[in-house]
Image (cartoon, rainbow, N blue to C red):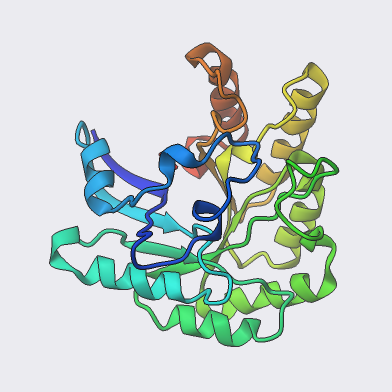
Length: 254
């Protein structure tokens, strides 16, 4: 099968700093990190994709050194420029916190790299600290929301990662900036697998799909269901395809 992988990660622990992949193990809803605390390079991605014809790929920011947010884009551009990589990753989605001073300069430095395509800032905010990845709900932060407009200057997209209770705020953001493409990560992360939680997720997904500038990446369904089976994730895949349609959906390896 010929594929473009729109969401994957690489890391080189010998050259770069990733706080979550070093130091003391952290409690995480995704499970223990120890098995992946090793280098994962283009050669590994190609090896694990060997049953397919991997044409292109998009790298999504990987919680790189927070003191050097553009460093990951710089490293990935070097990887892509190396003939041995075959051009991978063809697209780079970096990190920028729009609420912090200097966001405009950081975005400009990202955009100086030819493979740069957009920004992801993980926005998952929840009352349960194990499920929370931010110090606040940035979708309610007016500085962050206002500076989101900076993406339009560079024709850059935004990768949206959140839970269903935040989806209404994301819809307002998408409608406020209709020319900025938003790409929903990990099937909207249906974290509450109770009947009520699943219906709330569906309602949030329908609200997001009502915005013409939002696309959906179907991936990550095993991160919150460690004992997943084909039967357990099939309904979410089919729901996402029905809600967004095949023309606005894509599958990703993560």
